[in-house]
Length: 306
Image (tube, rainbow, N blue to C red):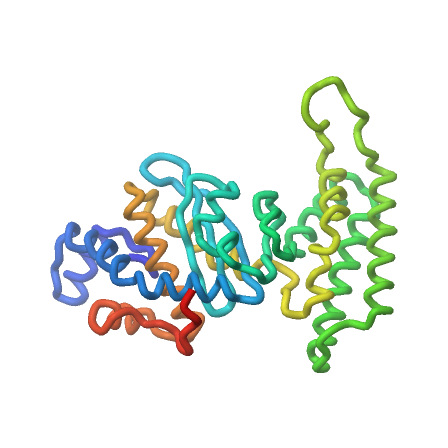
């Protein structure tokens, strides 16, 4: 039900027909809450491991719970996945995961949502998002700077990859300076073509439009945009978080919305467990068997107690 998103009634039917083990839908529905309760040691461990990580990915996606819009947040890296439910995309909802704002001091990789800023940590912005936005603006405006800037980011990404393959841990100061100057020149070109709108008497900041809004972000957060080139531990994109949260959308498409908050939270705890197990090449059925017998599987070596 959690790994393959099979609805409860169909799971009951499959168990009866394929395994000769007829069980009620009520019994199956109750398994999630039991599993979530038994998963508490794993959940604490995964949260502490991500809180102490040098780099962690963050993302969020909307989900229907009890007929209302809620938000599923993910914090993850290549070893752990931690999903949690919240009422919004805001700062408090992100902080409810007990990672950002709870002692995390690494680099937070994300797509640039403003709520992720202001936690007192370094950030790495998703390069894949920038490439998509730049491609859209190039098509919209016909200007050359978006394509040239996208080419620069890809070129720099390739340069980092080649340096890593040679066993390097950083690019030279001269190389970084050259890329930085090209980056600034393309931003200036774009800003000249898309000047800021004149102030008005209306309250609030004037609408910038898509090109100027992107240019503003790339200007204000240029250190975060280029973080991957200065710190080789930081990836170019936020694909890790997008992969880990994508299954939530698949669940909604196949099985529909969650009817209760408790059910949604239980699903996310189980999904965190199974996604983490997959990263350690553990079989889903094996770790679920351990969960209901000897206790939850926990990756070793154990992380420090928070």
